[in-house]
Image 1 (cartoon, helix red, strand yellow):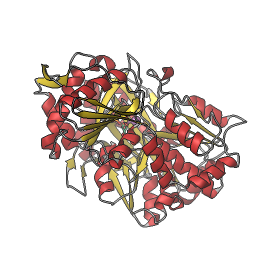
Image 2 (cartoon, rainbow, N blue to C red):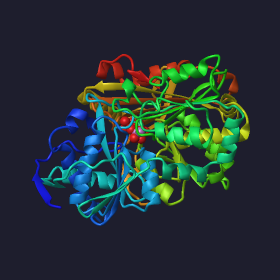
Image 3 (cartoon, rainbow, N blue to C red):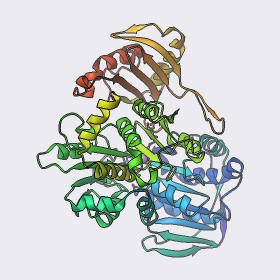
Length: 553
Ligand code: VG1
Ligand code: CO
């Protein structure tokens, strides 16, 4: 095999964000763009993690979106030219993000590459992304992503080889030069892991008893996982998994599992013949939305922050957690519902910056075993990524053991712990300069804000969230502006690190309501005064020119 050093000029925009490098497909399609980034990654690893990919095993797969098939082949050739010994590739180029994490751990691989822009839209006009995961199965920490970015600014050539595309549709091993390429079943290792975590006998009984699930894979990567696990192994009725064939354009759907983009699922769970439980996941299968049959308090979509709290409170019902949890963690903007559960369990609760990479050390050190984000991500120490299908199985296992409808479990959780009303307002594609001005302005005003009133709310404390990792001491500053109000409410402002167009301002709103008498109110209504106060405080309309958010979830 001839290794070819191909000159390339550096692209200066290859800084990975919250979750890998994410750009418009058109950006990734520039000649040399993928190659420059992947070579920067390979070049940066020896110093950043103490060893390079030569002689190692890597895992490779993606969510099947447009361009996945081309980039897979590019990376296969580059991996061979960079001396990778063994490459595990998902059949058809498909692997969900949680499956990559599971496979890295199961096969003690050096790392893995996931091709996905996650919940961002796909297709030629949509988004593409490349993420790197390290040997613990988790997203590369900032130290590595920054080293890759630094390298990408100086890269001058990449290594590849002239070889035809490899067929990826049949399982088995082939070679490219000295590298073994093993085409693996994308689902097998992952499904086996799920069987070790949950009570599959009990779940089979649940479905045998007529329980009806509707799982919407949104034409993204989880279809094959859902068919195998829910339908084949657990006996859910055929067709319980819908939109279950991964499509390059996601069939025109936007695979972001929230009440807005999975509106059909919400409607199905509100219909007279509704299934017992609904769920959906995102492009790469790491997010989940769970939906209770709509029936009074607790019915409908279960907010991700509530879901995390409820999973924590019920974790002892799952075989994997029968001895309880050492601790839990949530990203900073996630509601404080799980904090109250941790308090009542007498365990630690950590608050980390947004992005799954910040949970890795806590999980590795055994300080936590369950964690989540308000953005529909939940997972545990079974892997080092968030995990959509796992979260659905967790809920099903709780439902099977408790024998109550999901809505009743939500309502009784609120009655016991209080309800944290929660909403996120996104202002998408605003001019970057205006977005930065808004956040900088808030930062500057921080010292003067305590004591000021906005509408019904008085600011009791505020800061720009900074985090020091309790395990390795690494520090991350400027992670979002937190504003606490004396009335048990909170607003958080931060800019998205996954958007691909201008800037996205996220405003996270929450208010604690201890009294069950107030729990029936819809969140939008309960939070309207807080939303107005938060918008006024930051002068969102004045600075961005937007008088309403583009997305409310
Ligand atoms: C968003 C979410 C964050 C999540 C990230 C990746 O980041 O807020 O919680 O970890 O997406 O999720 P940001 O920076 O845009 O707010 V996924 O499913 O895209 O891998
Ligand atoms: Co995702």
